[in-house]
Length: 482
Image 1 (cartoon, rainbow, N blue to C red):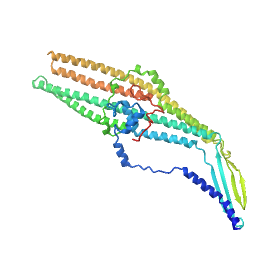
Image 2: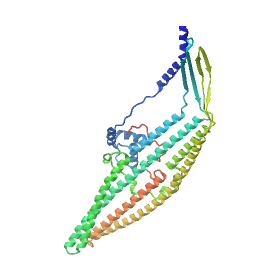
Image 3: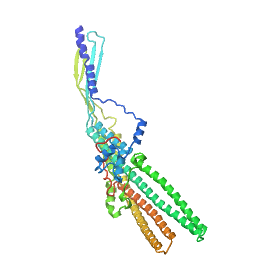
Image 4: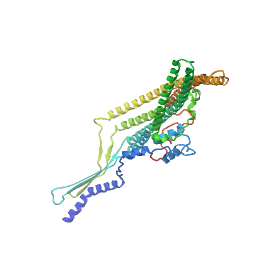
């Protein structure tokens, strides 16, 4: 009797043994949690330690673009500063991690559902056969290509994330360019105001001499002193703007201010913005309609919505499960192959399908809105840039006239036909006109930046290459964490 019961107990324990074996097999391939705490103090120290000469930045340059002849570069161009921002700016790293998350979602979408193992064990009051046991194994079967459509949707969403990364990179580049323009304009304006300040000081001395000789009244001397004081105040304000613009440039790159203090910046094209003919307005308008990053992103979003609709339509068809089933009951063994299926009686997935259709229409409308905005922005930016170029051309004509008058005043002084006050006045006129020319140049470069933003690509040679979802400068390899 005991032998029989032992043998029956052995069969009854089959479900437990199988379940334990399955769990043990799964445990061998499961990942383990690894803590990754954030230390704010160490993080802040790492940010403060960033520099423009780090080994990591050098490796990034080598992977993302042709490596400079010397490291660090003797002169940092706009393209160099942009690459440094791509390496250091935290918003790009956030976008990269979103891409990594979207790519991981493809793995999730492509996974097949796991089979189900179920077991039971029990007993009854009869002494002869006290054990009851059962073991079931069920394999879920997805129908109508759901896994394919689910994977396709995840892949399209990964494309959206990649275009988001490219758009984020362009935003970073635009901020670096704008900050660099502000910094160069502030420094050049400061130099012009310093020159004016020296000339104003000289003018006060000349007026003082004339006043002492009784040649001019007191109000003329007072006016010269007021103008000199105002020039000093303008110079001090310009010095403050230089400090602010330098800090803004460092922030746009993603480094502390001390990191860019020793950097020598060179922008040969700054003083020579290209004419409209050189920019090919027809190509600009075409890019605004077809090749903007947000347009490419909107197309990817529409493709993802299309895949999502296909998935919801496929979900109208129910999945089913099939698998062998074993049970042990009062000394007898039973085998069966059960099949289970969800009956689409109360709904046919109409709600999710309607939502997916509305989402697709929304993405189509969003694409048209982005395209319309691109057209409008490009037209406005072209008109604004043309106006800025005309203003710059007028300012440079006036500057040439002022310099010509200054040369004439110098010749008159050398010939003894005029005095130093006349030369001083001519030089002041040149300094004031030079400041106006710098303002017009600043507006032209700003307008050119807006035009580049309208098409979301550089328009001047020597800059970075046009960005796209696969640009190596966005995901260079190898790459160390900054």
